[in-house]
Amino acid sequence: MVKKIAAEAIGTFWLTFAGCGSAVIAAGFPNVGIGLLGVSLAFGLSVVTMAYAIGHISGCHLNPAVTVGLAAGGRFPAGEVLPYVIAQVVGAIIGAAVLYVIASGASGFDVSAGFASNGYAEHSPGHYSLLACFIMEVVMTMIFLFVIMGSTSDKAPAGFAPLAIGLALVLIHLVSIPVTNTSVNPARSTGPALFAGGLALTQLWMFWVAPLIGGVLGGVIYRGLCPDKK
Image 1: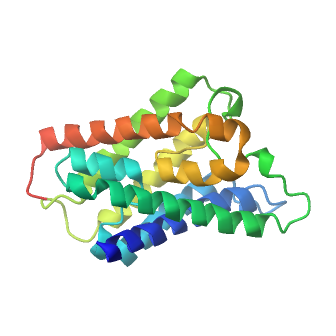
Image 2: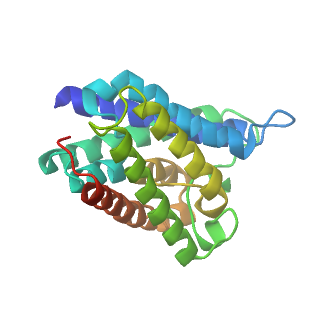
């Protein structure tokens, strides 16, 4: 268990640092900014790389919604949910802290500008309503769990799960960045929010509630459609 939670902390550190770092440091960099597509790819690649690195150790959840969703889908023991979630949140906070130290080294850095945090209403990139953002996070996390459950099933082709999961996360970001700045991951949301403060912190509750609901729905629905031994 110690090795598993250490792997989850390291993996979630990487997802938060690399994914959010692409948004904070590289997305709008003059002339060579990577933009929405680049940020989406960065989040997907962070999952692909860690899936191959630590998937055999911890399963590479990197996300409380994934852990809870897999438990709801019968793929993960309920007794291990809490240590996994704690490890993921700790990893995300450390990732955000390291990113903050690096990003604040640039002149004109302003953490209150967002720091890759998630939000709804006035804190949404496209100023989408709370309801729209809530539905987006539930649906996207539900589909993410559906893909995870399917690609890691004992009936799926072996060895391709990390690619399917990573590409699913890329697609999720391409659709939902304008709406919520894309969470589908309460740990990823928590790290940047602690440093951004303000609306990012007061709205954080939604980026726990909606992904967790979506994760449970995805796990339960897939389990109903295709029960297996894993």
